[in-house]
Image (cartoon, rainbow, N blue to C red; front, side, top):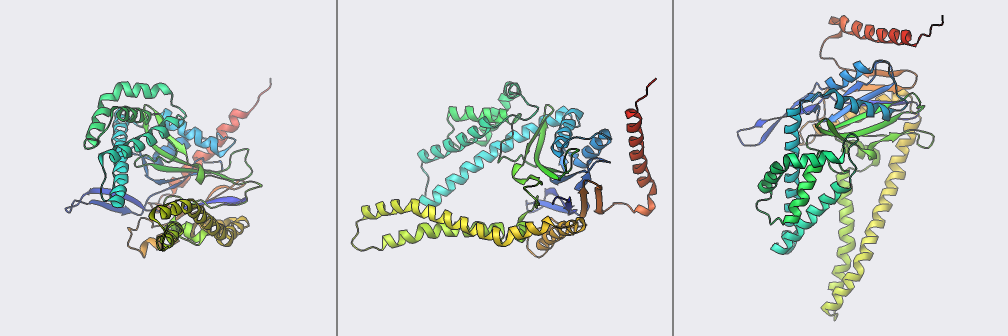
Length: 448
């Protein structure tokens, strides 16, 4: 996106989990017909894109989006962010999801989160075993304490969801405490869990109903991206959100701030990849994320390891003296590796990222659309020539949104033949004209 317009592109692949195969492994099926980009308004320059889970607690996002668009009609908001707030409020108030489904989904979230905490404890214990050969009961308790306290502080300090109140967590505990206790007993049965840690886990499970901290992604979450112009915006903006489930009509979502973009006089252009980002990041930065992580780890190991080997090889130096020298070098080595990593990042930014952004700044609308489509196709081709499941593919939908022209499709697939369904396009045209005429009638002023 740049100061002229924003281009949105998405593939058509959706991955469906299938029942267990005969070998006991979960099966996967990829369909190449999913719609992920939609016009949020029939007349205003705002679009919405969905990635990750294509359904919201079983309800297709496409259905919720089109229901919102139908009731939005000619209404406009000053900013794109206000469109997103109104959309999420609509989802909460519309009661699309029955109470029983909300209850079952919330219980599944509690079980999944406790299982995730246990997984982190076992991962940390495994690291200790690899380093020392075993893990004692005292070390196990220390790992459990650190893990539980980390999670407790994260949830305690997080802000409440926009439509949630502290009373909700209290009500959840009163209503579900027996269930939460049962889940904790089942998931932590092999671990020495003190009463204080159990109490903190109960509080965390209660807060799942009313908070969604940074860094915590709900199971089977969806990414929902709003892009375009509000009435008061001269430049496009993009707002990304992580959306989980809904409980007692409180929608669990948070702004994915690092992936939001606001074009203006200071920021002239930007690229925002979503879902499977590795190929786009490699194209922009000149280095794949995994390769970058490997280099960072290697630099740190070298900065720490080489001095230790030199110190160990010093003749006539006592063991205690060597240990002291290693301790003195440890902080220097850490600072050195950080310096090297920062210099590499600055080089990549100057040589790769900044030239791409400068080019995007001056791109006309058609070139923006071509670039967005090319990046999706590049990701699809990458999946095709690797051993990974081809989870990116199919026709690429492309839309361009500008202040003057609004939401314009460049490429769009249909599950039907357009020439056989003229009534579909006529109906869409009639609906827009009807809304426009009604808006004009409502705005008329008669003086007698």
